[in-house]
Image 1 (spheres, rainbow, N blue to C red):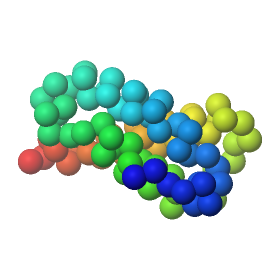
Image 2 (spheres, rainbow, N blue to C red):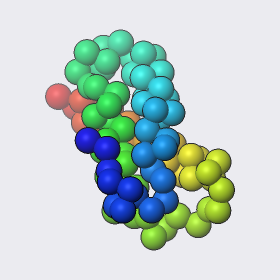
Image 3 (cartoon, helix red, strand yellow):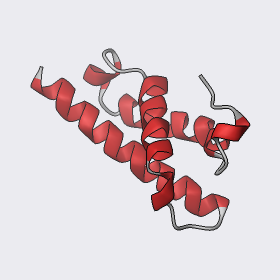
Image 4 (cartoon, rainbow, N blue to C red):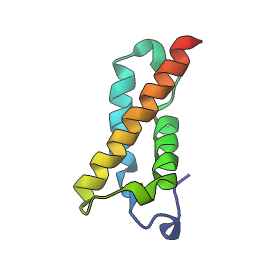
Amino acid sequence: PPMSPDADPLGFEAHRGYLRAVARLQLALRPWLAARLDASDAVQQALLTAQAHRDQFRGRTPAELAGWLKAILHSTLANLIRLHTQE
């Protein structure tokens, strides 16, 4: 579920669609995983991680925020891929 504006002072929600597209692309490259993992779930997990570590964001522009969120998403996806590869 989307965050309320008060809970999202950095504007993470504005990047949800972009992050979902990135996650879908990454999962499309791994068809064996796409059936087991949902892009929206990966994005939600990445946004929760970003929210928990928002004090570590040092950027100032929307582009820097998008890059920071994308890096968190890639880390989240890497962890999920490792987890699902071990099963």
